[in-house]
Amino acid sequence: MTLGLINANPVVHAKKERIARTDDPHADDAVDPLEIYDILYVRDIRDPEHPYSLEQLSVLSEESITVDEKLGRILITFTPTIQHCSMATVIGLCLREKLKDYFPPHFKVDIKVAPGSHANEESVNKQLNDKERVAAALENPNLRQLVDECLYSSEL
Image (cartoon, rainbow, N blue to C red; front, top):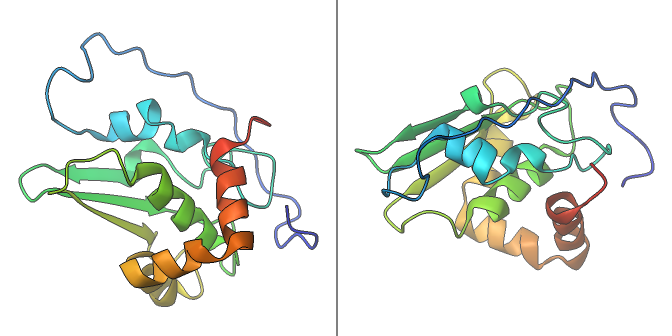
């Protein structure tokens, strides 16, 4: 965790119950937002600044994930808790790392901050969707450790 909290008092929401699926999620190769949100546990990624999940801080919801099977595109839009959140790129890196091995190679995953939700929206979006920048960021041991803590934390 960082020492100087940028958003010292975030609004925390209750976690939603996991939705029981009656069908086998692996029965076909179809990808849907619920599968990404609930089954792959992106909702449980810990915020880099607080001991809460992205779901609890309303940074991410099932509705913020869209899938276009025909075009092979997945768009994940997240909303940082404040406009000048310095952890927005870390959140995006966490999402990208969590999802990198789950989809067939023909799928393109775009990760963006919600329109109007960040002061540097264009810059953050560019960083999160540039493979070279993402790879370089994850080579930084401190950043890699922070991403891993968010992905594999059992504090929630």
